[in-house]
Image (cartoon, rainbow, N blue to C red; front, side, top):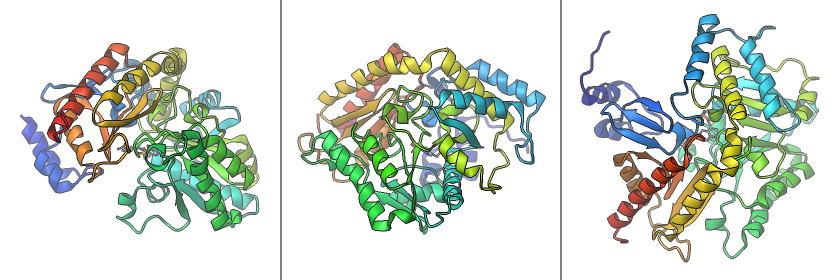
Length: 456
Ligand code: PXG
């Protein structure tokens, strides 16, 4: 088949005819027509009409080093020529798989010295569940199988990922969650905190975990999983009191603590990992996205020594993927992480561009639509509400977010809407001038939204 396409319309026609997109309404998307992205440089992408778009979302929270890093393409090409594929089963490895594992041990917190590879965040979370089950079996505590997560969490789209996730709209489309996956309240102070201070509310929200463990029986609970900051759920930054209290409860009831670092990992919050920003020490960390700056699919579960030591005595772990430790992905991830370390990217997020980004975000509090500004490092959210004094949301949550997202689309800025929160998570290499451009465009789109709903 040799199809030539002479116009955007022809690309859109073929896409509508043959391509089913994630999280999309098939009929509606065919009617609207997709935007076709052709190339990128730094924090910008271009579509096939030649429009230059500022990417406030780093792709899908992943292109940390920005587009067009030629070194990464060169590393991939070199590895493809040397060895495009070999597996890591059957007493075998490849040099990139081992080299990356060693580097990961270096950049992750103390006690994390082993990784299990996959190709996506969802796979890493599935792997984590199987590791956790295996751990308790090996300890002779096989009744500990239940995983507790939070409402409105996102942990992926596989059956286990969607079960752990707390997205009602995903659960509705299955018989989901699977048995053995339970959910507690998310630590969303702005909407749930009432008259409590942030820290008081953080303790209360963490207390939901203790209540759930007692309800289920500690002898049935295997692990608790959470994103340090919930990303897709709306960049929900928990109170400072929340994570240390979660850690205390997990230790008290002998429940493993898992940090889903798929978005927060690799510098997004200004530390290498989100758990370091929030002061807790998980037993396992799942990670993907920024691990290779999105240049190739790769994910991993980092397993703490205290878990590995138990697994070591338990025989075969009957789990793995064809692409576990894919050599080209590993080579690109190794190069990505080396660049982050050698160019001081994470320090820059912590001490330079991150604080500037947060300061500029805070300025939105004067906007008639914005009730709360949340964020840390280079991740942030503008929560749009009907009544700023009472925190009352709009009547049909999501409508105003959609209006704003559409203005963003038309005005060549990428922001993501969750409900009525507008989210930003730009490449970590963004400059202050580019942050200014992002904020100016975002304000323009919020102004247009406010006009549309008769607010200004
Ligand atoms: N954990 C977290 C915290 C995530 O954000 C996954 C796991 C799953 O990763 P994979 O690679 O399987 O997609 C994610 C993914 C959005 C959006 O619209 C967010 C994600 C994926 C797709 C869309 O914000 N996060």
